[in-house]
Length: 430
Ligand code: AMP
Ligand code: GLY
Image (cartoon, rainbow, N blue to C red; front, side):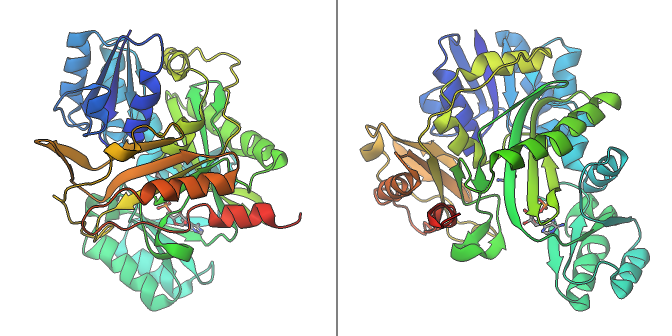
């Protein structure tokens, strides 16, 4: 069968890498891909957000399945465009993707369906938002969020009134995040450990993926600005069996049921960002897609063939499948460009990739890379995701960093502590 992957990041390389291993797949395409994806798939120069062109391409090559990585084409309605043309796609509809595309919609949806959340208020005028800041009914800190997609930068944790006012004025007055600033969501600040929880859904049933934990801040010890994600470990050492069960029962199952009840077709990945608070798991945010770099750590451990799962998901026919996972933990370390996340430098040659090709326990997923002549170069902020398996978490961490030591490019930076906190938790007596 013919499969098309849409997107150009590390997540899409990890998906393409896993799909390529399926004996069912004869042809694999990626729109537009990157230098790493180009080694295993036919890359076509179509931007992921050009949804009509992507659908035209899928129709021309008669793709049997399309899988979408990034949020923008989802929110633009690529799922609906494919369904309208009767082309199989693993991607939620535009209506379902609103759960990621609008934070106000997501919070109101959670209220309608009694899904555990922080207290919140939605404000549509600058005056009302500033009046909220004066009263600060949730105390400090609280969280100010621009309503729409803001590339992970639209949430500000305000520790005092001046900070909250500045955030509101930047979002609603100066329109720093464009139309995303037309509404703001004010949220109670939740305390606890953050966990990502991903499931595949066919719109009715769900199949959980392996547990995983991201490291969002740019610098070691969770310092520095928020990023798209600087590294992941799978499985997480936070979630025990009871936590897993509660998340499924209190959050994931009612969310998918709520989507179905509202006529929002959710055939894709529901990715819940959670805070494990003293009073149980609560939702920080929903995404309607695979995480990046969560997917890199997850695909490295997946033993089952992913293609039938994606096909069943797209067809609304997921069975009672249980996915098989490698017992070995995986660790993904993101190598970023100088200046990331604000203004990453680009155009530097990447050295050392060849030397890792034979390492059977390491995969280097490409993200912002391109091939220029014979040279692989950086083209954006998150450049590579060096992913290793190990007999235990410590071995996986060590192996990932050993591999990182073979790679270099001008201005390369990465966190040195990916998985360290998870390891410390494991080593503490329970
Ligand atoms: P979001 O923009 O909703 O994805 O949030 C980005 C990050 O901000 C999350 O990963 C959390 O670390 C933090 N965050 C968001 N909402 C809250 C909240 N209500 N309480 C505490 N931290 C939050
Ligand atoms: N790593 C977080 C995300 O994909 O949104």
